[in-house]
Length: 481
Image (cartoon, rainbow, N blue to C red; front, side, top):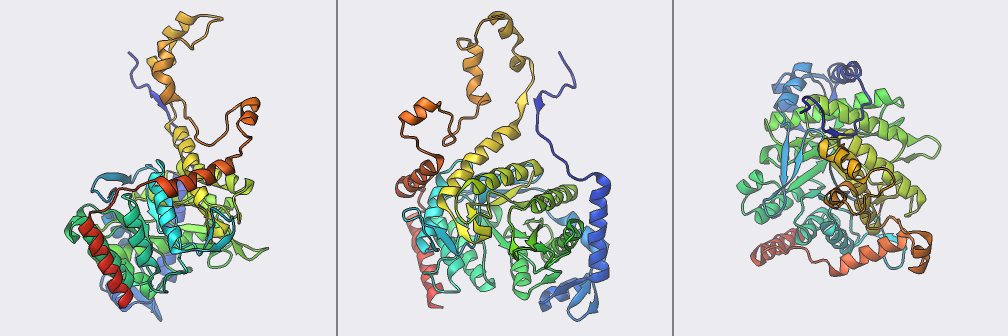
């Protein structure tokens, strides 16, 4: 018997060493104390001042390191997220990875015409139904901003439609506390009461500060609302290196971490122990084109640094992957999806969103949600590594087969091949003759065909009729108001 022998080989990746992590952390704390943050909400400002912050300028507060440290300490280290049926489906913390779609896309690539057009209400349902059917999409983002829904009602309608068409957790946005309150009412209806919703949360709100170092009034109000009502929230900066943050990556990370930690502090002061998923997005503004890049190598470096910092804090960490700067599904999109998904998995980010994103976060693609699911399966198999115990080393089988034999008829092969080998649904492994005989169909055609099939034939588990009627009533009341 071998003792102390690691029986599973697992992929590991580390960008920063302990000294570098501490240096970035200390830089963020110095920014909060010496430069401060703007808080454009009176309740949030009072909350910070009453707990040790100091006013150092108009609407600008200095946050002492001990206040930030206490908030890091009070935030939950592990969050369990449930589905609509109160079954635990995501455990956020450690290096456990979960993937889902994104939010707020104004444009969509039409599955029939292949034209990039305005996102519609029907696209929200399509994305939810497709995502509900796919095995590796763990949660559903609110996908788009439907142009055929009145302004001010976008987010409510998205949440309404998604909860009707999936039982998976819903990752949602809100414009203000007004629509957040309506969404909270809907979620409470589905859960069977707000106490049960707090106990079995199936929704996660997404909000963010304004870089550099500013917490807008609405962002603070939503953050405090989530803390007081125990709604899981992701509050992450979206900094652009060279524009809303320093062009150097170390400086961009330090500023973004300061923003994230100050948001975390506000949140924990409003509700000690309330559920929050933190982290940063610090990508670049392309200085040549004046555009934002979702997939620049610099973004992936700051993503890795973010993950390591928040793993160091012991906090659940947000991430982004399964997206592309390309305007249409093509070779660029495939490469960027693959690399970002692989990178986020190696980082050990817990809540990884944006699968299905195209065009720098402006365009949604239903078939690319299907592609992301395929790629996530690939990545998850890689992250499983492989066993090197006695059964898997297979020395007895090798002795039995001997030189010149084959393993096709061995019971060991039958017992192990299904787990050892990942099987693709869409990536081609046919030889040339078989591929040609079956119509020379490329992966793009398979993905579109699958997306259409799921849209037309997948039947998500319905909500109870009385719950549906109450959700419809809340939606109609919101329209009237």
